Image (cartoon, rainbow, N blue to C red; front, top):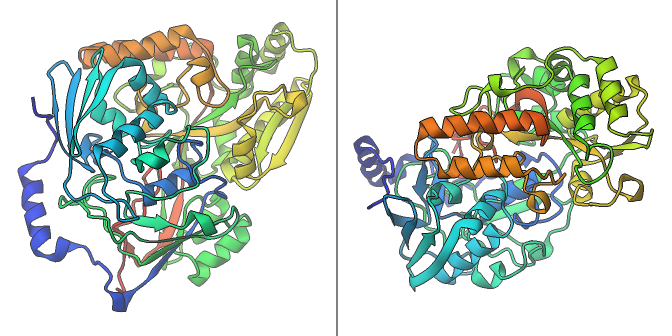
Length: 532
């Protein structure tokens, strides 16, 4: 059957009108050339989105790469580089055709050879990709424009390929995608609306992106990540500004256009400025990520002790502040989402219980060894969460070693599987963006597949069986039943420690149109400046 993408009659009418009216987007002419200047969330250390899930690398990747499918504003996958897909009723067989005339940023043709190799690299690394690989029967080329995917069981391939976070299924040239997913790329030839000169870039520098002259946007109007992507700015500059006061001054003086992750005190200071817009940004599930390979948190009782130390109201007042930006939540899938169920949680709720926490930590076998906490001082939310947890641990006489660093250093450090005493670690603070946190298919941090799991490497056979059962469920009723069991099991095993849900505040200049502050990974196509 033909895959039922949600393109309404109204959308088709809009598409025709947009084509006739120069797409209805204020595409900057050469005379109105402009630069979009962004304050990054951190300092990008690697440009390869398969090597890391770091926010800055992913934002970089969305500028220079495209995907076969992208999510629309209704949460449905839509063709992007793909032209169409024909799927069997049982979702085991997919024939995917590419749009004609696709090229990479070096002018070479984009073919199914590139796509297949890119998907092989993706599926050996990404948490959803690993689920895909485990069910893949074969993936074969039909011709340069068409290829076929055969699965051993039902699997929504377009939804998996449209995943926004984790290690998204970006399409690269075959020669680039042959690199092992652990080896950082040295070639940034891409398939997206912008280009990046990797050879001249060094960590810590402002990153400059220019238009990809070979990129051909879709004709459909934009919808979230899907549809038409127009490189409206001649240049995009993304800068790492670790000092929040410098960043604040830059926004007030007009030096920068977008601040991707301002601390809450800066948000409050900017809220009344008529030249700036403060957005609630993307919803996110806050959490503490323990290391499951080394003591003491390789024992469930030590992880349970953390739940008795965390009062979600306290930690969010410290890490977020303004109550309109956060709420308590004990669901392992996003509260208020289709599958999120707060009632499945069987663990501790509410105020801290220090006596219970201390008892559990002792029962885990903890003997006073240093607990190494990775503290990113340039990430306000994570920094506050880590200081709170450190203070709570000290109240039960734990030996706490808070090691301060910037977020980019943390992103490099967290890959270590060594004992904490040998340069490893015991915990760090993280978030799971709301879109990915709604589904067991895409929830990066819920996956507990041992060595293939996200940093911390939780390992639980029951969680993995339930994730597989969710994928194989026949309808939403079954999926909700499985999702409940999965969240109940997660509250027992604790693949991460819940700290509540909040919104990542973002600030942009009021003369910008088309900026989506709620996107889990910011994208900068289709943004225009009113003055142009």
